[in-house]
Length: 229
Image (cartoon, rainbow, N blue to C red; front, side, top):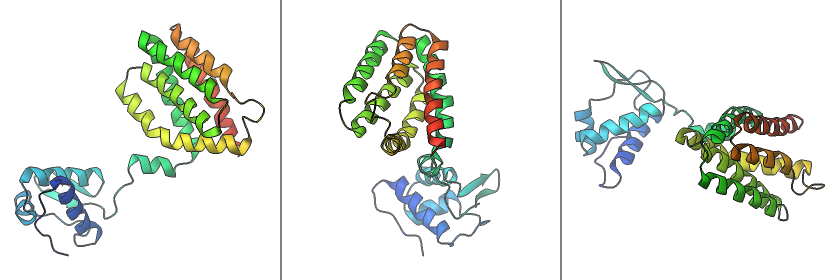
């Protein structure tokens, strides 16, 4: 395959795709030094800044590595899995162990940092979870996740919020599977209400220790159920 000039559409994405194809198709084997930025820019018909961004994207995918004073070299022909893909492939027990570390800390920070707006959102989320108890499993699990989102948001740490957001798709599907498989709501449609109420109340009154304890106990219980499957 030969490189060709690109259309004036998202150029960085196009440049990245073309260069990645050269690597994954074996045109540039592992150990190959890539042409310089100027050469690539001329070949692709883009600016050097576009090439530079494309090379950064390839480095982020684990395909190339810049070596000071030597240039950019191919170090792999298969991209590394991104975080979302890795999460989907991971054992749910592993995901839950990391979730516990993340959310317990978030709950403790939330108790220290919650605002009046957070308090309102937490009460609304708890009420929403209770209202969803009369609906199907999907609505109930979504309401449960919404409450946990509200706790994490009250920590006011954008990194924690972003990490939890990455976990949500995996958690939502696996929780739904768990609820349906074990029939957790057959006897108690509002399964886990006591623990969630304790969590919300601890955050609202600013008790970081109690907030962390309430969430840790809830997640440990769920993790034990997952391990029993």
